[in-house]
Length: 476
Image 1 (cartoon, rainbow, N blue to C red):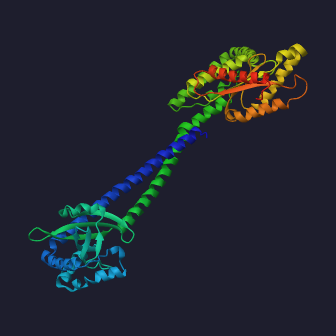
Image 2: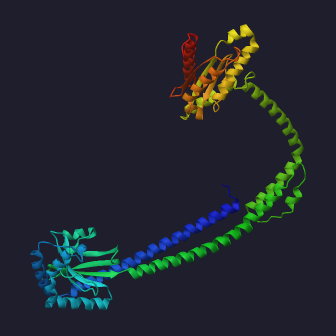
């Protein structure tokens, strides 16, 4: 597909604007997302740390002891993935009495108070069962669907280091799950007076609203940048038209209407292009060139005519030299030129050809018995059959009764079928001795031979063997 200079300029401008606009949207969205994520992670950690400081570790220890007593005496433990199942309900029912204890109520009240003050979705405290790698809820202050005491979750991959390094806690991390959407979660160890970890103060903060705002901002920014891109492209195209395309079009129009041998420089002189840049330099050069052309046009026309006549004569001589006068196929000189081309393809590692050798049988007998003209008829008939069979490959006559076919393309792929067809066409030839063709044939395909001549000699040898069999009366 061809594009004008104006079209190429427009494509370039639009492409640059699109790349810059897209990059602006992506970079802005990435930068804002990073700022928001960092802000929410810091807030989640600060709130979790506040809960860890405010909680009464002694009350938590009492509640934890009661829960672990039940937990350790429970053989079948059911994780929250089976929420709502009879097995899960039966498992959770074993811990239901804990919600009536003073410690549970006191801790729940503390968590909800902090939760309301900080306007977060969920505060909860939990413990870790290292042997089973489970996360056990003690108190969940969520207003909707809180996880009851004893509820189990597996330890996520990003928090597995906690199993060997309990003081690590739960560094803030962001998840996007189907039931909860975007959440930032953080957890901080709660210590007793002996600096022993009693539990982990956890916080979940929903990021659904801020993610929606981010998406809305990204869409708005994209629309604004799109409008700016369209405006910039339009102004750029107008500027290019005025400063570049229009002067070039004027030069092109004047040059297109220039008549060789006729003084048409007045049209160029009348343009008055003054762009003070390379286009003006081009305009001056074109004016000078047209003056020079008019000055020397007569000599050029005369020289061109003489060269044309010489070339025509040379082309005719070259054509005669490369065409066999008797059959019209390629001559020995044409084959030598083709062989040189094949040698180049071998050196370049691109060779894919074959050579077919054909020899007309009993030509000397025909010449001696019926005259050389009938022998020529036999040669022409052999050439005709070769050209009909090997339609997609060049045919050459390299001797009195010898022909060469250079297999290429489809003929190379179909050589076996073409050999059968050649034998069929020869067997079908009927009539006078010069019309009933008899010819020996052999072929060889290039297969990493060093030279074209080796392929030629291989094909010639196979043809010679075929000729001997025919003389002995054997079937081909």
